Length: 291
Image 1: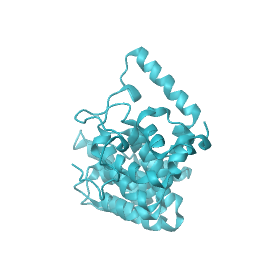
Image 2: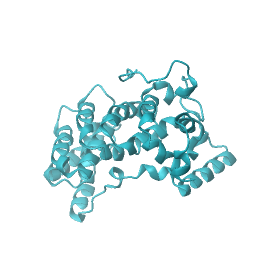
Image 3: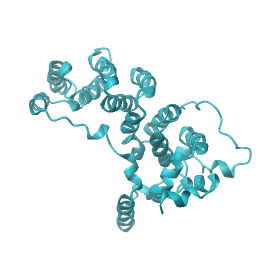
Image 4: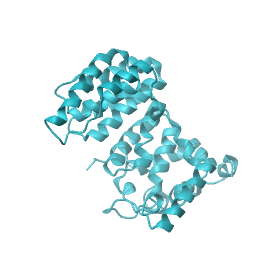
């Protein structure tokens, strides 16, 4: 059904679909949800609430829809909820969200820079959350040329800081390599040579940058930017939905517990749409603490 059909639905009817449609929410519904300013605060609460990320199926899919739709809205008001979602998605290994967040932040643009910069520099945060923040900054630079010099200075700062965790430096270096940033070419080659030697001293150290690969990439001149410019709303296209349903069917037949059929992480209860909860006419202000 197209967006015109969903435009006839009341807010509570449309919002309920976020919790009941699993991964089969139609594109027209997602587009109408994007347009409903009245529902944006409720979607924000969904993605900011820890219990939403721990919900049982089918309600668990609400966090995925919430992130995609807020990202599609792309306003300054969506930045804080999506930064909160970054932390939860990273904490609970939700790759349906983490894989697309860099591109989503690129769409949000400059209003997200200060939030992502703070997270990228926060050494008390985990490396994977900081990596997502750096990738988000890179995507902003890709889609907003006026911000490019600034965001790559931040990424380069993490890469060049010898007091920084080496794994994070490696990840920042990979971003610079993806973009073939000329200002860091020699530094990347030197870092890769050091990286190559480290396993001789520490066999647990993961090799990330190969000197020959770095040099070959710069010689080829071919950037690797797909990860920073993905279309997350493709999730709602009929062909994508059909492919997922075939995947779930195969996994049921083979006994796999992946994807839609796998339960969310343990420890959380069932989260209900706000419309079902008495006394929840408006979402609370502020961000819940990240526990």
